[in-house]
Every structure is written in structure tokens, then in C-alpha cells.
Length: 257
Image (cartoon, rainbow, N blue to C red; front, top):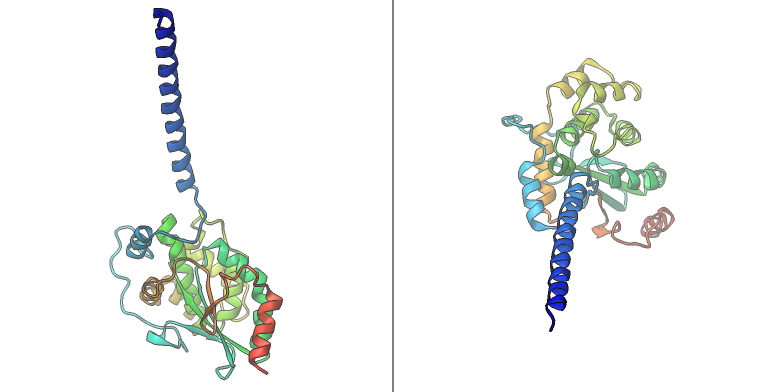
């Protein structure tokens, strides 16, 4: 082989090596950007879940939020479920949700009217469980503080209406706007009779913060991997790609026949 050919091949190998290193650098930067701007509510890896469970709902440098105080009327194991609808309804919808979670908002807006219709007709009862997934994943305290505010609204008998407002006004996932208690108090003015001194004190004092943290721990202890998790009589209907509000309604109506 001539010296010229050897030099040409060596130059080609060196050029290819340089290109590979550049590609590795681009891939590394791309992965960093994806992680930094992630808006995914589902946490699929056990290692990630462990980190999130350990850190969700905590203020940087904060101490324990205090004694566990369940909101008025809370049901179920450890009083971690906020019930909506008639107790005697034949079908039960269990929802694990996070007020900062975009997927939760998407589910809420798609199924809200149907859920309201079925609970109003006495055919369905809903048990809401609050989690702080996004606080752990993205940082901040908005998941916990909005969940505490929702629990305060439950104390006032205004949970369903305030629940809807929190989703209607949900900020972008990367914007921890719900960490601002004044924002949560402003939203209470959109619910008749909720903006009271008692509600304001409940929100500002974080009355139900420890309860929210216990609820979030129960979420991970239950083996769930993302919000929303939606169970109809124990069956995960959110994972059913064929599920629609109409199909959901038929399932509940059939169970009530």
C-alpha cells in the first residue's frame, strides 16, 4: 500500500473519530435539554420514583410541616381520600392527581362534565387522592401548597368548585405559580363563599401540609407510577387507550342497572 493511501485512510479515520465525538457531545446536550425541560408526569423508573418519593413536597431547608390533620369528611385508609358524590353510589372512581400535572388537567377537562353528571345522578362517587409528583420532579412546592388549599376548601365544603378552578387556571408545569399562597387565595374568590378568614388562615398556615405529604407517600407505597392514576371500581381505566367519556359513562350506567 502506498504511503499516500495510508495517509488518506488515517486521515479518514481521524475525521470519523472527530465526527463521533461531536455527535456524542450533541447527544449529551440534547439529553440535558430534554431532562431540563421535561413536562412528563409519568415517572417510569424505580430509581427516579425513589428520589421523587424522598423529596416530593419539601421546601428547601424546611423542617417537618407539623401534625397530620385530615380535611373535614376525608374517607378511606388513614382518611386520605376526599369524597365527592353519594356514599351509596354503586360505582367508585378513584383518582390520584397533582394540580401541577398537565396530564391531570387534560383528563379533568375531558371527563369533568361526565363525572359531574354521574355524581349528580347518584350513580358515581369519586375519591380524590392528592399527590406532589411535580414538586419532586421539577422542584418547588406548588403541588403541595395547592393540594393543601384544596383540602382547606374541603373543610369549607367547597372542594369540587375549587378543584375545578385549580385546573382551569393551572400554570405551565415548569412555572411553580401555585407555590404563591396569594395566587391560591386569589383563585378562591372565584368560588362563592370560599374566600373567608378561616380559609385564608388554613392556606397560609399550611394546615394540611403533613396530610398531603402522607397522601403522596401512599401514592408511591401503592406502586403507582404517574398521575393521573384513574381507577373505576379498581380497574385502571386511564391506561385503556380505547376509553372515552362516553364509554366511561356507559360502564357506570351498566353497573347501576
